[in-house]
Image 1 (cartoon, rainbow, N blue to C red):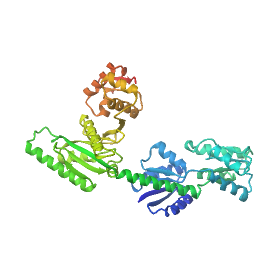
Image 2 (image 1 turned 180 degrees about the vertical axis):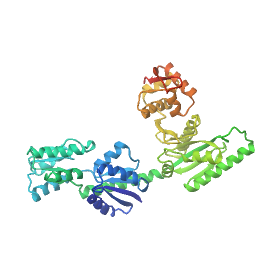
Image 3 (image 1 turned 30 degrees about the horizontal axis):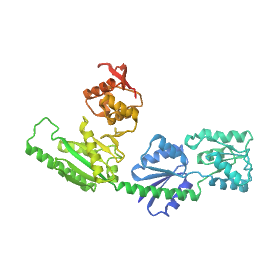
Image 4 (image 1 turned 30 degrees about the vertical axis):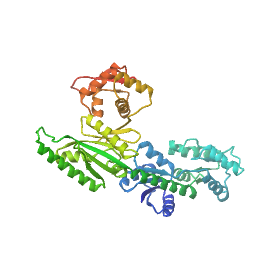
Length: 438
């Protein structure tokens, strides 16, 4: 069952809910705007945040809140909206001409592109030379701009009325006593959107059932400096095995111990995605450390088959072992690396590259493509073009010595240069600031 939250004006939410009943694998939830509760966009953001744990996706009855969610990265759940198609204009023109007795060749229109509008007018044999079109697209929507566009044209007697695809603009123009018709999605467009949601659900189910392999190794048998005997280490190993078995029962996974004192866990993609909150956290690492006083490294691999998945998992485990902290890495079938994963500060980069310039830098600096792309991703995360050794230490999860060694290799390979110094605070030594040359 796909849990779908429907957000929009009451009338369209009710209409959508009724259509949703025709699809037995969709469980709809009505979340209409409240008329006197402020901006609809702000309400949409609050509703998405409030119902995040109760839904698999959100359907917006118009595109504007959809664009807002994408722009502000409000949620990682599936997002859908009803497109405003040119065919919806037919009904608006009919109502305006027949029921409102307004000259439809002399109006202002928003939410649709010129091509859609002109083709409709041509098919109806209407003159569009005095039709005004708001060229500000919905992705760049501004309530004041949309309202003022229609208002100024009407008050200067250039138009007889307005056609809008935005409910709040419709309500505002009504208050100014401007004749206005609201474009709403056609039933065809709504049903087509629901069919698209079904297709996404089927793809999601197929992906969620993919098998993922985790390889877990013990990096330290004790978090204290105490030296353990072979028997004590064996007891720790058995305790970890039991903890992983408990995990497997809770998350329908399988645990296999190996001859190298490692563990392999087989789990579905959907389950792991939920457990890790979209691959941003690994609760297992902290839980085992706290309960058993054992430090573990985790490598997660995806692949089109078990061999590829395990190979990726072991490469991911090697990355985790290189880290100074106890973290996990994930490598998917595209050879994309996500990590270090532990507390939500993950980076994403590629193990391979066809970028000839990057390959050349790798050869000159004796640093891997992985390391170079990691560093470039750090700068993207920091949203600046310079960095310090402390930045590499923090985000690569390595020691300061390793960080400085990496910078020295970059400098020797003409891939990096010193551009200044920064003072970290009232105390402490100034830090060198560097800039990449690739």
